[in-house]
Length: 147
Ligand code: HEC
Image 1 (cartoon, rainbow, N blue to C red):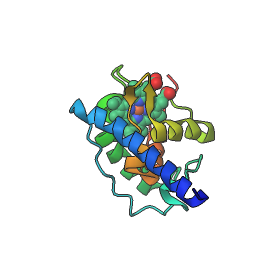
Image 2 (tube, helix red, strand yellow):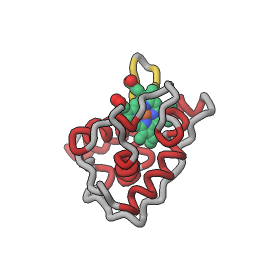
Image 3 (cartoon, helix red, strand yellow):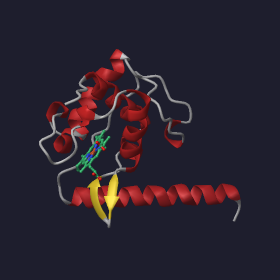
Image 4 (cartoon, helix red, strand yellow):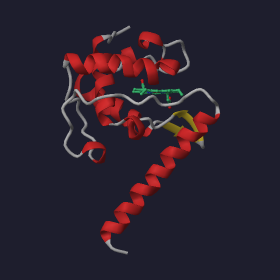
């Protein structure tokens, strides 16, 4: 098997995995990812094949606006309206600001949280895309709180 084919097979396996996790959630009837229109934002080189670790849109007003709406449609049902957690999932206003917080944020967004076959958070990143993720992160930083 040549390297190119192997890479393709790996990507296909990863996609199948994330779709399986998402489908389990859909089976509960409560999470259907809503597509996010990010066409107004600059593209990230490599698209969803190359995830960067730090927010390329921090402070960008367009990203903040898109992120607020994307959050409401895709994250609020678990993380709470306005990012104020009702206790089901962590309060995302508490995420550390800046580069360190970025790394943890994008890791969870990309991979979700799956333990012992149970989906605590679906891997929404590959479905909604990297640009939407950083837009959400941009908005979250504007509602950050320390307590
Ligand atoms: C089905 C419910 C659900 C949805 C929808 C969901 N999450 Fe989560 N999320 C969780 C849970 C539960 C955890 C805690 C996971 C754990 O402790 O392993 C979590 C953890 C996180 C964390 C890590 C927080 C921390 O303090 O460690 C981030 C970041 C995050 N989610 C971002 C998002 C974003 C962004 C969205 C929307 C695109 C989203 N989540 C949608 C349930 C959800």
